[in-house]
Image (cartoon, rainbow, N blue to C red; front, side, top):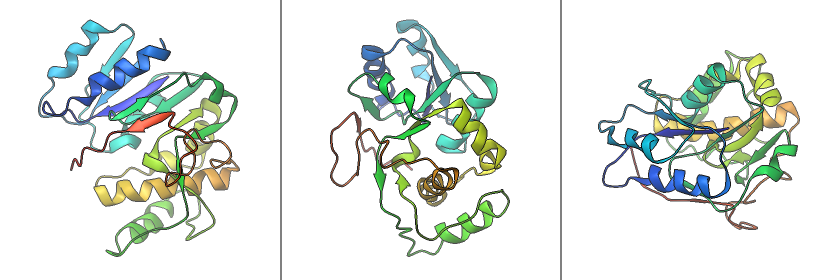
Length: 214
């Protein structure tokens, strides 16, 4: 159920706390997808917790690379995509009734002074069955969400699985692209959101530690 991409930093080993928090509320399978970590000492986490799989695939496509690798390999009814720096604070089962639930959302701003995110998004979405949108959507904070297999099958049918970021700018664009995708598929990530609006959260179901990684 849980997918966690991990770029391990021995000075900031947040993956241990992330797993510990999940295990306070859930016993479901956790798949950690390694993001080409220089140090893989954290693989010992499998000795401390049960039902953990580590996919050592040299992932360079951030959260999306982890998501689609796991989706194609493991058949689950729901998939919860989290950063290794995301700390859940309560059980998430009630959100499974929704097709998709965002962790948080933000308003439709591309915020692209470098003129990098928009051209990349237009180009990459042009290779799918999805349409680029400048506005009329809400961004998916951190590209983190809980989604059913049905929803992700719909995304894949639209070739959304081909949208894979390789840079931080593209990763930031993905928060907007996920909002566009869910809008076009008819899913309301504002009504169905755990924390709510990121600048004024209703509650903190999941807390994010900001590590300023490259």
